[in-house]
Image (cartoon, rainbow, N blue to C red; front, side, top):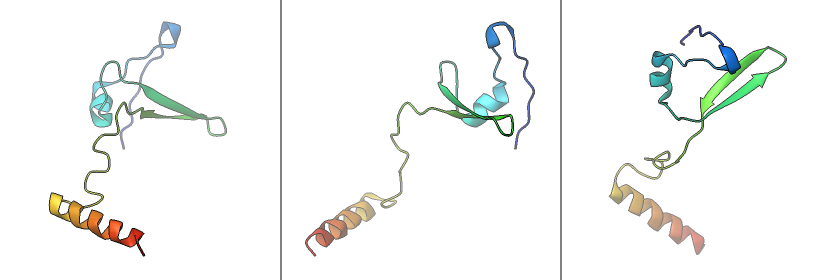
Length: 80
C-alpha cells in the first residue's frame, strides 16, 4: 500500500506523484476514473484502459499448441 499527500490547487488541479504514476502504469494524458464513496468520504482512482489487448494472455494456454488444443476441444464440444 502506498500513501501519498497531494495539494489541490486552483481550478481543482493536483499533481499526480511520480511513484504513484509508475505503480499504476499511467503517464501524461492517461484517463482516470474516480469513484467517490459518499458514506466514507473516500475516493478511489483507477486508470481507464485504452486497449484491452493482452489482458487475457495465458487464459486459454501458455503456448500456441495449448491454445490450439483448447480450441479443438472446445469446438468438438459444440457438436455434443
